[in-house]
Amino acid sequence: MKLVIQRVKTANVSVEQKVVGAIKQGFVVFAGVCDSDSYEIADKMIHKMLHLRIFSDENGKTNLDLKSVNGELLIISQFTLYADCRKGNRPSFTKAGNPEFAKKLYEYILKKCSEEIPNTAHGVFGAHMEVSLINDGPFTIVLDSDEIC
Image (cartoon, rainbow, N blue to C red; front, side):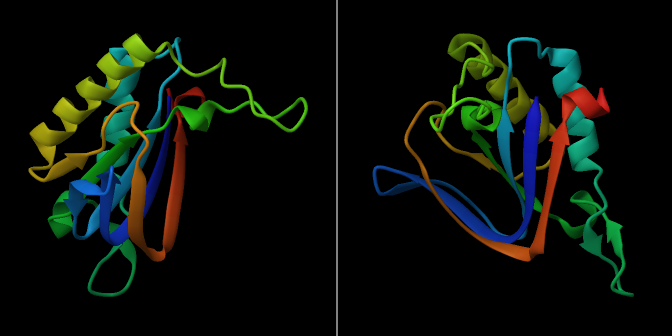
């Protein structure tokens, strides 16, 4: 599993020119799933993401996590995180998870995150989406289950 986390001031995602998810301060999370992922891996990744201390405290130090700042989440499925660009110029996506499995795991991630973070918004799995955000920092972190779990 790969999560690309961007600390944002505000963000939204649209499908067919209609906003389907929006947040204020928090994280935009692009989530990619592969076939070797599991619910156990998802739990570890969610825990790590929700406890990242990347918001500034009163002294300007990145010492606060998402809950500490009443942050919000916008989680978007993104199979392209598993692009293989080693050969040629057209990426291969064979490492991305089977769509049926990936959708189940994505929905599990949404459910678990919404239990911790009241405003957890999301995109539409498999849809063409347009994402707008104001990256705060910019601050972007990549979590890869191969390195964390």
